[in-house]
Length: 306
Length: 325
Image (cartoon, rainbow over all chains, first blue to last red; front, top):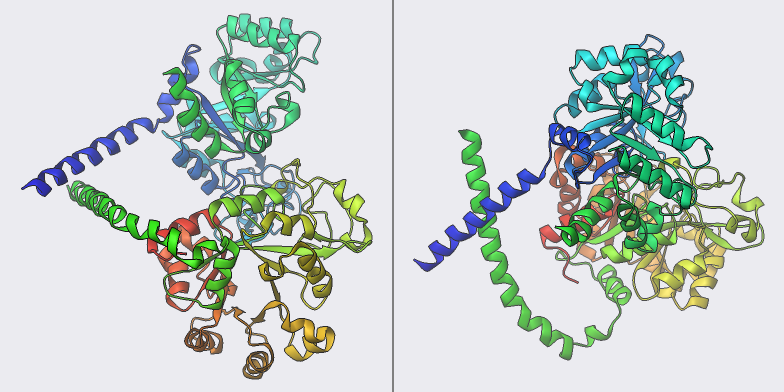
């Protein structure tokens, strides 16, 4: 009798555990809600070029891996083929990331899809091919948000595709330019997408630029890039938060986050780097180590606060 | 409904695993403590225990070999990628070494530093100081890291007593130079040399040095006179291991693997790319699951498995119960 009861208790425990695990896995809608709530404490992790450690950068598998890890936003790069299709590719040429050579714009989609993506050792892996933006949107729908980099060159056509997939609320656009320039380029679309300005303390007018953005479109977040942390950087953080926006920091390299980089986090310590970024009130962090950062936030940081 | 049933079954399996797991822990605690006190094996360091497994391969232990360090975690051939392998519990880390202009062996896969560092040019045209001034790139070539190119000496100091090092690219070229460093660092028993050349060639070039090093001959489908190639090696230096490469499931090489299994010689295979293991490679793990790739290799005689996915391989081997060192 006893072992049976304990078995039932264990089954119950496992059931509860699996339900709570499912509850932790956020949907795209959850992330959209968090994105709009400047007071939300949840940290949004943005994976640079997808999970490029475990799959080729800008591959569908790299996005799938991000979804499984609990990444909020996958940052992907867009180029356009000769016959007008959008594909995921960082460089203008396919030399570095595939077994082919030449510019993306000189190949048709069918030709591009005949190449293989390289793994991290530079070896082409036949299971990975260049994905279309459409395929990337499809696997992301309902699951993860996308930061579409380099899309501004064909904004109208990219948005047409995004609208066809009914995924405008999944897509984030960014620019380093001041409001007037971006408005001239994007027109009415600027108010109808998630748009985040990129700001730097090296810009003498940065506080005015932030204010103008806040008055005109009240962005949900500002990306702050700073080679060193100083009073001006602090003033930027304060201005963004006072305007009810989120602070987005890139921990990719030292010069983007005042030395608080992913590599330092792994080598010298996470509290001094990612922990420091969180202490500044940043709730969006773009990283090349999404798995380790999510683990840090879940197990070491969030527990302190909750 | 079907799904629900499946889930239910899954939960029961989970619960059973939990229940059984807790029993196992209790049972195994006592002998473990005993072993600590009584057995002379306890005084051996980890590298020595690993070497014992290479010398006497058994079904209950599959050696995990990491290709170029854990390059998904840190730049390939960097100290950080090696430290990560040590932390993961990897047995053998496979690294590449090339000679600088001023005679230092440094960890570098390609002839040039172009792909993996911030610099350009051939290793053989650069001094150690010039190589040290460079920074390694993250894999995929995404900008630079803080990591420098390590020397063989730095690598062996890091690995001493902890992990075996498979010295690639030294074959037939820099075996003597590498051996000198192993001697200097007291790690002669931790270096595994490899090569495609026949024992006749190696004898002529290195003489009795071949009797002082651990050497795995590599046998490829293209190797000429395979039967004699292997027989001559066995007669001359009785290698404790071979690296076997095959592009078909049933061929001379896979037959030879069975013979080596019977003779107690360690068989190392490389799951890196499909034509090295007849399609049972790492990428297949993602598509068809680990049993179809790594499992097949182990079932077919692999004792040492080289991978580009060390973290996942260790997990799989633990699940299979073949990691009892």
